[in-house]
Amino acid sequence: MKRFFNVTLIVSFSLAAITQALAYNEGETSPADQEKDIKAALEMLSTADRALADSQRFCVTMPHERLGAMGTPKKITLNGKPVFLCCEGCEKKAKAHPQATLQAVESMKKANAALAKLSKDDRAIAEQQMSCPVTKGRLGSMGTPPKLTIQGKSVFLCCKGCERKALADPKATLAKVEKLMHVEDEHE
Image 1 (tube, rainbow, N blue to C red):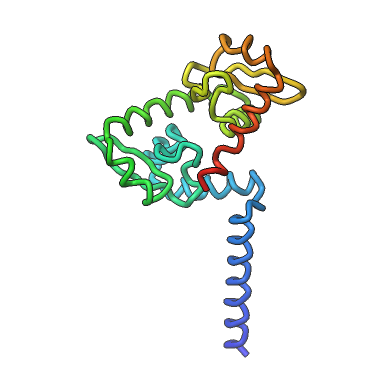
Image 2: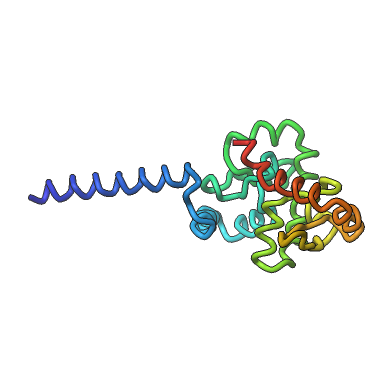
């Protein structure tokens, strides 16, 4: 009887893990669950490394991929400085041009600090949008991004200077934002 119970428990656990993995792969995981998974993956890092990964927030070679979304981030050292990657598969690309990689990490840290000044909901939208629909520059690279509401939709810009162009053709701006929101889908 005990043996039957153990086998049943293992099969039940395996089916639950498979179901969860399939749901995640099919995009059925809620944003809240994704955040929990990311948090759990980042908690596998030391306190110091977690702080560094939090300041970088995204993979330097796949800038739409949150650190922790693919498990515990991979840490490498370039010119004596730590760099976090979403996975081992990004290591070769990051090491190919170490100085450019380090510059990209510093730019990400600056942008992420600016985005951190937004509300939690606005930050989530800005991070998904990632770039300005006018200049295509990374949101946060010029300070806290201004928010517009165009036809009921939130739109973030790199700076106030882009407002006039964004509002001049609202349909085109919204189309660009829609495309920006789905850039990560093209990388998968």
